[in-house]
Image 1 (cartoon, rainbow, N blue to C red):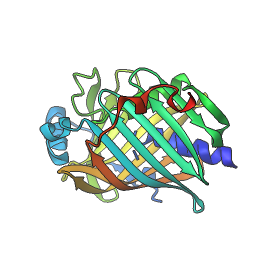
Image 2 (image 1 turned 180 degrees about the vertical axis):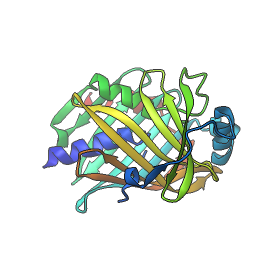
Image 3 (image 1 turned 60 degrees about the horizontal axis):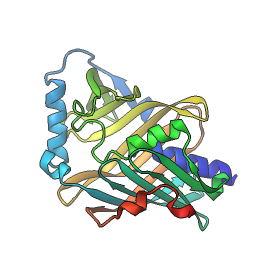
Image 4 (image 1 turned 90 degrees about the horizontal axis):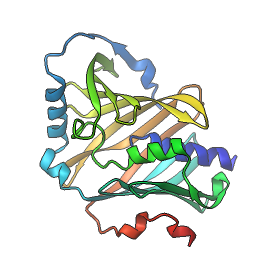
Length: 261
């Protein structure tokens, strides 16, 4: 039981694009117009950037610290903290039943220590988890500076999600991972992401929805995130309680083996 809970928490957080952090969003989406939009891809993303607070403000983020609560089902709850620092560093800690697990990416390599998942000493991340940790470490997300990052973005139609029209963008990351991002056609907030992930050698379709968008220091963030994996009964829900912009975070926080020395 503990192993399954920890695995759900760990994999779910990495898939929250995130990667920070129930409805049935897949069933609520209705395809509408797959034709050329009135706005170009560049214009759609520019409005998304503006809605979040502007490129200058977003680039001013050097470090971030987010804290929140995870619920898997009705009884399984955990506390989570995610710290990120440019360039490409991420530290994730989750505490369940008084036991804390750690997962870190230092910009090049990742490691983990998760007693609830049977990993009692620090060890390197598996390749598939390391790839997702690298994505999670991107403070800006895939849409901002997407060309410079080597990603590709295409317009993939419009869909209605929970009564709201959205622009659907097909994002192919430099790594080859493909994600569909849905941006509200009115507010340009990100409301959903669909992706295919590999978990323990299996391909899993994952839907992540974003809600309760609020600003911290003038920058828009979702404070409610829900993750649903096709064919799995658990629904992972993340409530973000606090977001700190540019807190002091030493490089040592992201060094490999830090907690195992």
